[in-house]
Amino acid sequence: MKKYIERLYQVPDRDINIEFASKRLSFIQSTGSFRKIVAKKLQGKNSFLKKPGSKSVYVRPKAGFEKIYLALQEGLIANGVSVKLNCTAKGIKRIPTDKGKKIEIEFAGEKKVYDEIISTIPISTTSNLIGKPLEKEFESKNLLTLFYRFNGDLRHNHNVLHNFTLEGSWKRITTFSKYYGKHEGDDYFAVEITVDKDVEPNISQQQQLFESHVKSLGLFAGELKLQGSLLTRNAYPVYLNDNVDEIIRAKNKLKDWGLRLAGRQGEFDYVSSSDATGNAVKLAKSIKQEYREKIEQSDDFDDKDQSKEKSRKLLLDS
Image 1 (cartoon, rainbow, N blue to C red):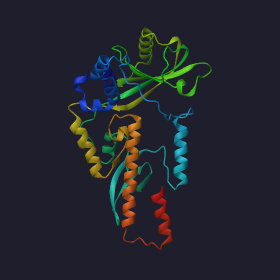
Image 2 (cartoon, one colour; image 1 turned 90 degrees about the horizontal axis):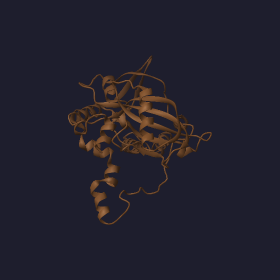
Image 3 (cartoon, helix red, strand yellow; image 1 turned 90 degrees about the vertical axis):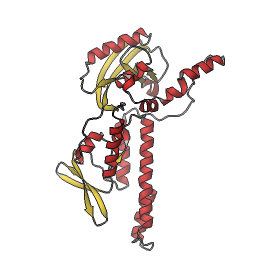
Image 4 (cartoon, rainbow, N blue to C red; image 1 turned 30 degrees about the vertical axis):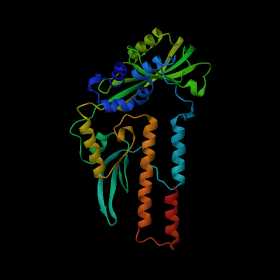
């Protein structure tokens, strides 16, 4: 576990905030702790690790995330939502109105006014946009992904493999052909490697290190063919022992200013995709409930006003 967490965050395990690390590795902690393994051994059980229960899961469509996002966009537009893409925010400020404060975003060439802003971008970027830059950048790591095509025997039968050995820089392999089927007889998978954000990774070197390591483990008997790579910057927020209080203060400042925070970057929290989605759903429900209460308590609401009733129903049902 020491080596795994250091491989994941690229810093010594003693420097990582224990609460943050425990939350991220809760599944491993609950199923593979040393205490539970010993207890099962004493009970005479051959299987030390708890097998996950069978369940249905959703995966991205074979065509990729773009297909999902397009469907979401079409659904939003059909419900009267304006979608603005491929734009760069220049600044965010609060402006007074007759009905309280609104929030204005300045884009290149235009300004837009909104009731609420939900920020899913890095905290440092958001802080700069509202004119309150951070005193110090928070620690985060980049993610290098290697994409492979493979012809041969995988030597494993799993969708995902995590690297819990003492060697190797890769942390996870996701075999997409286990979800979608082979392509022209070949398997295909992605390899994830955490890298420092200030270092430009050597792709050829990372390829050689990965291939030599997995073959030493007896995996992938056949031809590994690298298809390409992708570097995702600021992919993994890192909570260190000496920066937790600063992170909490920075998040609270943005909330006190009037912004909502969501997602790994917006909340600066390295949680699973499932947890990040769950948190976003909770936030959406909270906002909806707040607006529901405002509408129901509105002094100028008239039950006989059909146009208002129609607008109110649309919001409450959406």
